[in-house]
Length: 420
Ligand code: HEM
Image (cartoon, rainbow, N blue to C red; front, side):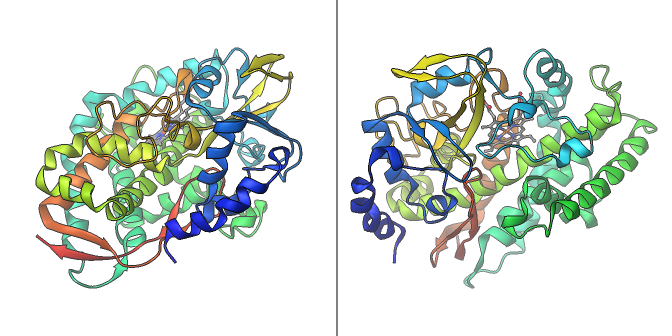
């Protein structure tokens, strides 16, 4: 059964659900990729929607582009604070608390602003320029080792490997041990229900191991000449070198987690989107300069993080609905990115859009993704190198998707390569 048929199969069912009973937090809807039907209905009928009962408790859904922007840019009313619940629809778990780690993505000003400023030099364009040749060299290695004409899983062999490799390059992490980074990223975001860790206790232990490992790297870099990897940059830069270690670690983990699943799923999502839209694949093969506009289009299309959540600090009206102080407010970026009142033909994947960066995947306002240039850089390099080698990355079977309402993930993608 194709993905399209699966969506059509549930369209009638979605239309028949009383609007008050719609609950878009159910991870199965994302795993089956039928969530778009629910968002289409909410945008049309009740763009600011209240769900009274769900496994994550009551919450508001904001589903239109402009309303999402209004919430995301109003941090004085809509808080990201971890202690109020944080940034995901499911309240933050306390493992980071147990390690006393702090992540500025789940903080409000002034602390957020100070920490963000301290990290900024590490992802500045000048540093990315320095890293680009190494990222490219390693991307080439991976692509050159792939089998031609044989079926294999793109996610494991390419998306995970490339993202892990890029992270290892960015941190100058011991090369042979680089899969530790993938593991720690998965563990940081994992709940026991996902099967990634057995219990919160097991997760805590792994994160302590991660902390100790990075402590070793940090101490080593402080005592060496400054280099252009992110750890060395942070250890030596006047803006970051005096951070207490746990603050440094929390921010490092944020960079690892922030850059891992998101980029990984954009790499897989791009291959899938091109296969589902053969005319677009043809356009790309005819004119590889379109990679520049295709990269942001892939990021819009995939929307690797489906939402960010806020907590209302005061009563506030939005879209004619009265939000109360303390309410959980969820900005569904995935829905806003399909809002055709703002994005022309939003439900189509078009690699030569006029204004491809006008999307919500990186958020807006004071928390707008700091790694957006780095994410685009990686995708650009990968697609340039894929294009040089392969006439087509053909998807040969159904993709498998992650059971998650936050990370829009592709866990398996069988493909076959056609040499150029
Ligand atoms: C924040 C998405 C890649 C680091 C965010 C936010 C989103 C996001 C939605 C929150 C925005 C908001 O609340 O308004 C993405 C996507 C990526 C990506 C879709 C890839 C396609 C990266 C990379 C890094 C990174 C590669 C760095 C290695 C961060 C950091 C923040 C952040 C540090 C917190 C910013 C703050 O709170 O001020 N990202 N991200 N991200 N991202 Fe990314």
